[in-house]
Length: 247
Picture 1: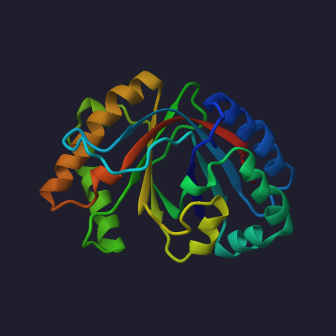
Picture 2: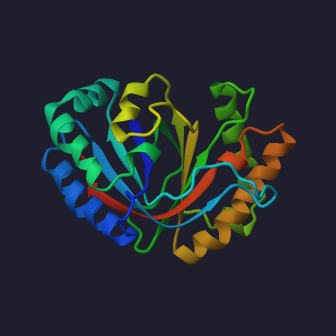
């Protein structure tokens, strides 16, 4: 399974609520009318965010994301066929200009690794998306190994921030999809090497415990030489909206 992830923000002059309404009911309806080979389509509507780290007030990441799109595909062939389809090129793609600040979009093609399966459709649950930038000097395999190992060390502490997790998925970059990423606008290249999806029972649980989890992750990362750059990483707190669940 592949997951095409795009963190987007509203175009200038548009309110956050107007953006979310159009994204779900306008753009989402167009996608649902003809899913092509998309297995599952999820929108993550952002209600809060954090950027950089406490120790580095001059954080260098891009600001402001209103939603994160997730498109799930069976394989690369299904992804390529969907992006090449006239419906994508003539209907779905051009509609993005109605709400998406195209030049600032950040996209990632990833393969999900489920380390803690989320409970399905818990009412009120929150999904925290941690966009992670790899440290300089690492290769992708080393980054992925250190990321999983460091997450395991945080859980092994058995502190409240670990016990509060209701699910955890690591979306790990799959190289070679630069042309696909340009569908969302932006830079047409991978900027982030991974996105963690951490699930919590409520907004209060997420806002209380994820910052502590991330601080512990950062501390353990430093012990091993550092696998990610907190200054260029960011966190989005969101509610998951399923446009269509797939087969």
